[in-house]
Image 1 (cartoon, one colour):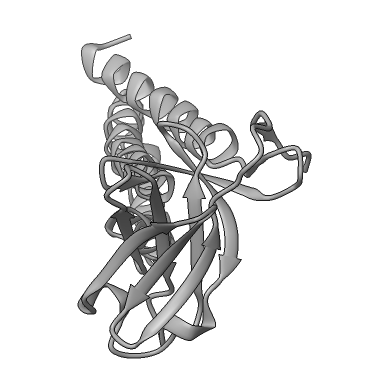
Image 2 (tube, rainbow, N blue to C red):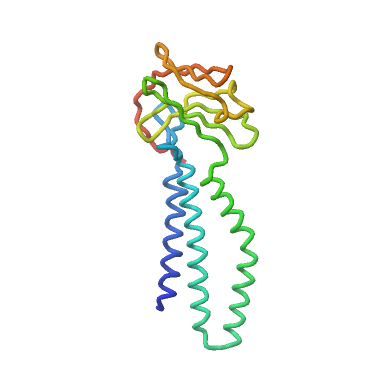
Length: 206
């Protein structure tokens, strides 16, 4: 095996493993004992962004590895007519697969770049919430409360904050009340029950 073939095989293998890991393991849905969705969010980085970047890098690495491996193996063929036929066939297959690959890469990029908004707000008492808003018309707003250092658990939808201007563009602040939190964005407010159980996180079955 030549060095080029070795690098190609290594890149293809690593790309396949990392894409599988990011999709099946890292992106697996998690929930607490009450069945509420638990999401990863740490220092402004969400789990979906991490998954998207891993998938994007693995796709690009797999494409480079496939090119190195295929070109090297085809170059080994001694029969000129067969080598040219396989070369042209590989080029045609690449052209046909390019639109599909472009769509997959675009989806991974949107996940990595974030197609919605994640706004983390902290009260003077140190309690915090995560507010997510979809990236299209902004009509889906969800409030998550802190679960642990790396996770937030879904608490409730917040239709009061849907639409425009978007949550990230409003002057939002969070204050602690007796046993609850008050999230205020402009003239709209949402009350959040701050009493959460301490259920452990578990991966939800498929």
